[in-house]
Image (cartoon, rainbow over the protein chains, first blue to last red):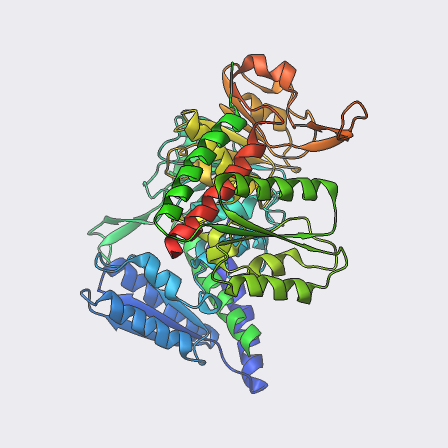
Length: 291
Length: 291
């Protein structure tokens, strides 16, 4: 069994971005600039958005964190997004999800200029993903593709079973893994809450991606020998023995499953760091094509 | 075994559209208008586009067929699309595919105003399909959904195996059948040229959709008892005994497979007429929301 080490793979991507960004600076070219919007003070969201801002700083990007109160109106939020759309210094815009109830997430995502949508959630970018044409890929699926690429995991002709059909992970990843690319060319099955026997599908899988948000859903009896297991779950569970007060739990029973795998991602340190690395790559690319 | 009769189901949709269109006329409202562009004189393309224009006339829509020589430049074609985009009388624009080599199909499709893209190929419309939000669905997958709906075929929790990952059929249909809708909520597997054992996947399927364009690819030994089989294939094969000079052959060995099925589509008279019905529905809807 080998670990798909997201921290290491993400570090390699960040090292490369740092060099490329310094090179741009030397040449007097524009430095990438990510603007992140956070509404409210949800602990997990704050952690994620802070990690993204910190990652920008590490590789030499500029970053701006814009925070709003929980009760901000949709109009005011859309106004800010439009302002960032029109700001030529901003290369990438991300709005940390989830948003409070009074705000329609879809309106906000659709309002982001597609060419600055470094989270890859805008319909135009999703549509281009389906077509297989160049675009900003959604950060988590893109991060998983980069991780498979980093470790040269063979995917062509493999049967990938994805548990979860969310807009931001399961669905776009199913398309990416199935497209005629490398990584890609998998036979992909998408399972979800209406699937009758998820265990049976998993038992036949060469690659399992667990993206449903149920801690330790994937157990050893669901995994065949030699399979590749990608764990997208990051559920916070109260744990007073930790300084943070919580433990992160994945969707895979790691200790029991790992011995059966050829490759497996840990939680934390697997998909999480890759999501941020993918966001940085999108932001760099947005800056590069425009400047 | 029961036939999923696309001619009958399409007729029911056209009858309804005819009434609704007459109703609009009575109320002095705008009548739907489809503009179709055909480049060159490929026999199959001409047949399809003529069938679409004729279907418009039958339900009382206006239609315009614009034909160009095979050697038209991309610029000239894009100019015509832009003209149709700007014409408030045109509700739906379709460009019959395939296009000749000198024209980049993607440029042309992307140029069509998304709100007039009744073929549902524009990235924005594909992106909205992935998000599950209202949009123009691509005509063939939408036609298949309408056919399943017409015959009240149960799909939730079923395992659908789709053979073919094309942009216009297999891929969007895989998303529609997997989304949280009715028809929908299938566990969907997409097979393609890199899949090792398509037969084995099919044998476990409750629903098989054959969309690869290989005549009689799906044989009886690939189909389990009671399954639903949808045949999207329409390969023309020379046949001098026919007035047209050809026979249409589907991707399914109908005679051998049909006895094992609960439902099956014939070729012709299955998915084909539904594709046109879906196009009409999109065109009507485009007119309705704008006027």
